[in-house]
Amino acid sequence: MRHLMSPLDFTVEELDKLFDLANDIEKNPSKYAHSCDGKTLATCFYEPSTRTRLSFEAAMINLGGSVLGFSSANASSAAKGESVSDTIRTISCYSDICAMRHPKEGAPMVAAAKSGIPVINAGDGGHQHPTQTLTDLLTIRSLKGRLNNFTIGLCGDLKFGRTVHSLINALIRYDNISFIFISPEELRIPDYITEKLKELNIPYEEVIRLEDVMPNLDLLYMTRVQRERFFNEEDYIRLKDFYILNKDKMALAKDDMLVLHPLPRVNEISVEVDDDPRAAYFRQVQYGVYVRMALILTLLEIEV
Ligand code: NCD
Image 1: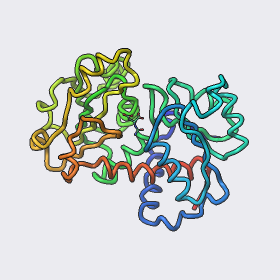
Image 2 (image 1 turned 135 degrees about the horizontal axis):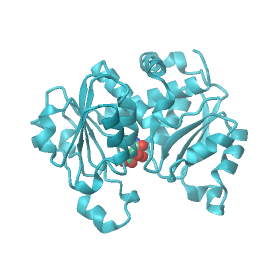
Image 3 (image 1 turned 45 degrees about the vertical axis):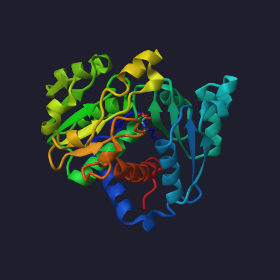
Image 4 (image 1 turned 90 degrees about the horizontal axis):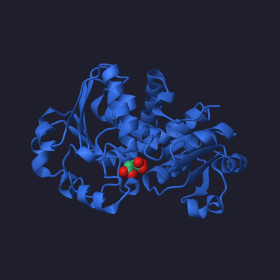
């Protein structure tokens, strides 16, 4: 039985197969409409979410399956002190596959160790968010036709943003990728990541001003300042509007640069950018459903 804890759980070849499947689902949705008839997905969310939980649910419904679950720790027996290990053993009796989000790093892995069904990490604290990364990679591959030869700028909360950590981890396996990390001093990318890039000889630079690097980027990955992971509200207020991507900044970028964002957005992308053809963040949401459909089929070993 296979779980998904990190994007690295799949080889590059396995990812290619997964993305081919997702693109086929995009083109021929009706072919897959009954492939999970009789199967149930559980969504166990100990932390808030809109897209991730609902896109898992939409994915299973589109495949003909059913869904059950909870959307906050307060609405589950976690509020009574139940461990994730006990919860997953219970959920294993009710469903065939589980997507779990938890504020504690590693919690989905603890669950997977005791689970009778495949567990998908749907975000664990500031650590990893593999299905967002699959979404990001599928979006880039579908819209650009490749996953190599890019300069990617990652901008915003690079310290606490798990989507950023997961995406870097996944992209370093492709050729000729260079990173530009754009953040205020306090929200810099963690050292363990830059250490790894140095070790692998992967080029990166760290800058504070977005304007300075905008013309160099093929991809710009914007992120929200992760309020819930701050220790004090004052720091959050000081840093929350540090970056605001607007039309003026977009005018400095290449004509075919893509803007990605895992969403939710707060103020970091002005709504005036939404109509720019380079803004890909809502298309990204749609790719998130296709890739989760492909993932469910793959982990349940269902051939269509
Ligand atoms: C991200 C997350 O939960 O880490 N959202 C998502 O799943 N699309 C990003 C965020 O919350 O900022």
